[in-house]
Image (cartoon, rainbow over all chains, first blue to last red; front, side, top):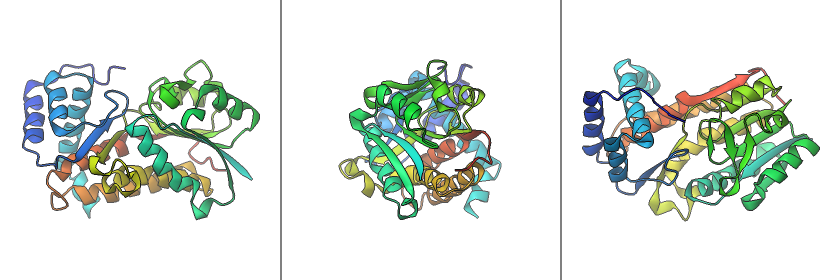
Length: 81
Length: 214
């Protein structure tokens, strides 16, 4: 299934890459995206997927942008209170 | 006694985690009155699932495994239930699929074919894990944040709550875990984990009759 068919805005992709590359997530934490790559990935591999804009990369970009939107709209603050 | 069919393949890291965490459902003290039909490992195959669904008529079905918009998979990713192939076997049942994207097409069609309710994920389910805990998944506190909200949902349904109440409880649990990771105080880069939890919470959907209960 094409998770996200529209072309990724290059500026938004750069923003996501910046967030991922500056992330200090410990090396032992991995992420598995069930119906694409399957196996858990480290941050370096996640970044590669985003750079390539493949199916996994597109999901990561969408997930990060959704989170930023939730931060901006105060949804995360509401969850925290 | 209420019957619950549960499928638990364990052929890769992700399914090993789902397998281990689903023990929390099977061993729950709150669910002693539930008769579990446990298809684990290689028994999570199409032949057995079809046989159990048609002959045992479980009221609740819990699927764990990989998936896609049109199928739910079992051991070694064999399709257990496929859109327009055998989805009518879900008729009259409450289904929870911890399986990527299956709510987007298969779930919708299962409802059209008479399933009471289908709870699942309309997009990929993301699981964060601690690779130092792969041998002991139940001690993986990162995985806990992803799989405990899922277990909460299953247990809630099997305790007799409505689908709506079960999904509310699951989302409350997701929020508690998001809150934990939304600040980088918990660990550096924790908001990566929070963003994945938010994604799962937002993609969890309940289709069909939300008042359905066992």
